Image 1 (cartoon, rainbow over the protein chains, first blue to last red):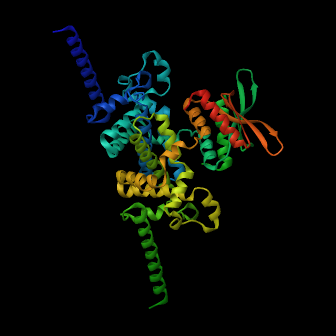
Image 2: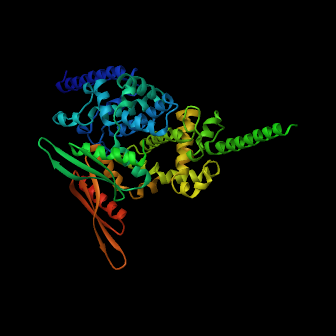
Image 3: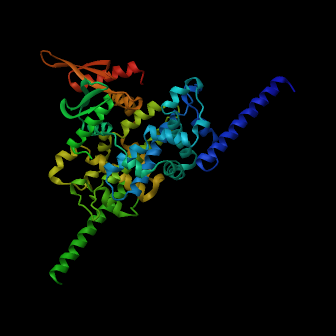
Length: 247
Length: 247
């Protein structure tokens, strides 16, 4: 056989091996074989290894991630709505945002083994995996499952394969809320300007104590303290939430 | 007939008349008769007229609004994903947020006639209708349709009856983006602190000129100018977006 032909066949075989591995992985993660493998090939492709296609679009999982993020939000909203029939909207919104946040999705992504399948620029490994490489890929897989198998299947995949096995909802409820994002959300809803400012730093013997102040439309609201800027702001945000009666 | 019995029958008749009107309205808005009318009764009930039920939950449309908001987000995400196969994620996210924003939903809600069906405290009319009474009710109706008829029906309702007839997507694309929310979104994603500050006000002959400055992790970024605080901040945010290469 001509050497070039053999090389071509080898490349083809290698690709098939890769596809086979992907099919097995998707079967394990999602619970059934892909109908349209191309969707999942795209879902595992991080933008760091994406190439431009003929339409000038970079072929990465980012579009699927955008779609999956929305579907995930809807499925979790539905699940919480039905699981907590006597809880008010504020509770449901807060718990949902804790479930679908970056950290939580990144953890789930790691635990279902997305580190085995995601394709990314190995040189950027440390940087990417600290951020949300697995969470983003997880969202992209959700987007692929939605397009491949429809909303209903995808909703069960999200709840039964991603959320229930890896998140303890009771613990999620008990964990601390992010008061800062609550204030920002409130300010956007009420069309107010909100500012977080560090108004003083005390240098103690072994640590520093920050004082943060929340301003709403330039009026001071809650004041908070902490050993880091973040903690002081979180404390100020919590006190502001109390003052504004946001629960 | 005993007077009390007649009064009871009259109350019953009046309720039925109200239900009949609601059924007609839903048929017009949604395109088919409700299966479970109770969902729609709840969807049109603003919290200003809600009563506590035996579980201590205020029976208003807020829970349905929470659910509808998520379903709306998913349906619009899907629609844009498929309508713009060669657009990147940033474009899709931005256009989606312009479509599902309060103002836009409130307008659609008014135009499909929700002012005819929504129940609210008439004393608060001016205040409520300036805010998002109709947009919130619209989201609650979407939640009701989703529970009543499933995702697929609801998606077509959203796209074919709410979005396409009342929004010109080309115009939405051409309209100005909200750079401030773009910066805030970016800062949350990147875990940065962002602050908008008015750093100076010049009193000119006929107007005032504000200068706004965006700070990211306390480092100054874009600076902007305008005749109002809001405009100066928007300008500073736009310049920051350019500096950060967010498009």
